[in-house]
Length: 416
Length: 86
Image (tube, rainbow over all chains, first blue to last red):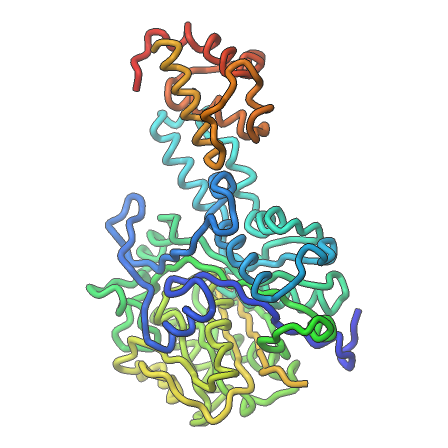
């Protein structure tokens, strides 16, 4: 176990692999965030009229055989693509990495619904005779499946697990990596979050029944966090995965360092199945700041969680106003306005899309914000056009989820 | 279906199970597993696809008949002789 005064306690991101509805690598993703380009499109799902969704277009067979794609799940394909891209980006001599010292930690919102729905539909064609239920069901639906597929692809023999954390999962994957690296359980982590959620009709139908599924004649304008005319969530798929290392290891191999995770926190509302709680969210943010030895005034960009639901945006806004006040030098932005809500991948993608700000000094915008909902009343939201910042040293990333799970991560621009 | 048509059905199933492999030189007398990557889950895919496509029920004790293409076609021919080609 490494102590806080040790350099080994310092944890850095050294490789990035991602797929989002508007980009399959960090450069394209960032360019489209700065250009205001949405990735939301019409999408067909079972049993329902067409919906809107954030759909990824990565090349699944870039890092998998076609047989592996067929054998596994969409979440697995997303994870394998992103993990391999991260390893390549990290410049690792992968052949000679000690695979038993690598851990794979992937946040997920849910897993197994896609396969279960598919199989129930399949046996409905056979009078619900379960003899037609596939033998692939169990290996595809065990909860560790996406992380396990990464170990199969990369030959990792260290620990792997998924972190089930609803829509707080992207941050939770990184947090698990930080903890395991600081404990000395592993020497490298492949961590982040993934989502295949658009391939289950249930998530759309459930949000629709809840009155929380976005609709708009123009798909690119459907995801409208903080806007008065928002009408719900656009569900998206995606993945954001990083190689995560202790600083001395990264320095020893001359690694490119994207940023240092200096603070994190997770807590629970203990209040409601669905409705968020600004008090616990604010507590979570303050705890992350405290662990990072920072104050709210140190943060340059807040990457907000807001999903464009009625109450969710109001609660997060209340928490942000309470913690950060009206300080004008703060930039608050929102990635879901471009790509929709990538569920288990959301926290990871939203953090990673902001990381290039350490170099270009730009806070990407929140698009589709025509009129700030006065009940949100946030004055620092970067509306519709990117903002050139005086400095970007600290990014704070919010991710919250159902059953009252909150996660906050603080990333610092790397310096010696 | 004729034996040749049944061979085509089995080959289509194998092609779907092993999409990365070239099966054009498959030797009908040699075990599938000696000529392609075919684990136990893949093997069960053959059984399942025959069940789904043709309602053929293959009991576990008969699995040994599905070792080679020749033995598979021989085994399936009486079961599928009255089934139309898809």
